[in-house]
Image 1 (tube, helix red, strand yellow):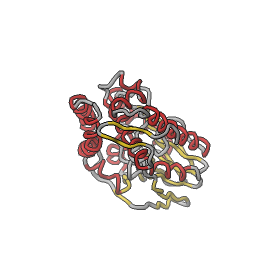
Image 2 (image 1 turned 180 degrees about the horizontal axis):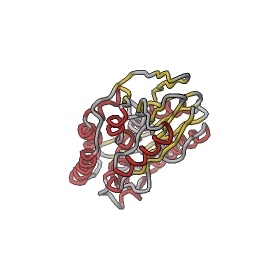
Image 3 (image 1 turned 30 degrees about the horizontal axis):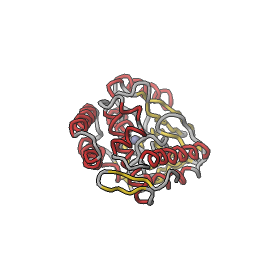
Image 4 (image 1 turned 120 degrees about the horizontal axis):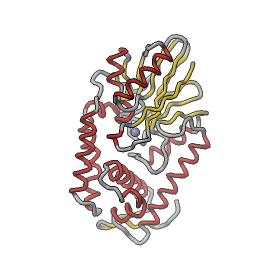
Length: 306
Ligand SMILES: [Zn+2]
């Protein structure tokens, strides 16, 4: 069994030039699978075709998605049409493929009210939402795919098993091959988007079991020590939220202290909305753990340490 890591760049219109999604071709004696695809685009199609040709002569048996974000499934539809490979995703994340725009609306629904109450203008939120919907519209969501609750694939002498890794999205999974796991965005550093932090901390414990965790962006593979470092970053980000709300502060005031850098360019939607969504997740977690309380539109922390 051989693992071939690929980095599929973000096209420039996605606003994060220079970055990309880690995808992985995994091939055995006869079969070849792809874990996550990266975003669609002419250059990316050529790149993945070339990689596939070299790895397996163009054969692709399955496309396994770690979760339903567009930067992980973007090329799936194209590859499915070209190779016939089945696209598989956990049933809890299939909503993203069914209607990405709807999932953006729901995601916004979660942050809209607290954001307006916390001092953000409706206009800047609406602008950010519109830009995200435009990006979603130009992307090609797969229409034919298979959902699973748990997945086991037998591939000529080796197996792939899914493992639930919720937090980043509620349907995030990893794919276990031997002592490695392909974990998508379940292992990202503390500054990025997590829907449920309580779940994410459990997920990080699970990831420490594996010798190698193949991540969805940036450095890969990660070892247990790297996962420990990520956990530490979440804690320090939580503590910076506690510090910012020590004297009582609105969501916007906390946002500006914790993500000062991001506010310099608020009209790139990912620079406004992802940290905002993240901050709301942090505050909900801290509230449920008894570290902060909300009175009116102000958050107040009881300590600066977790
Ligand atoms: Zn993601």
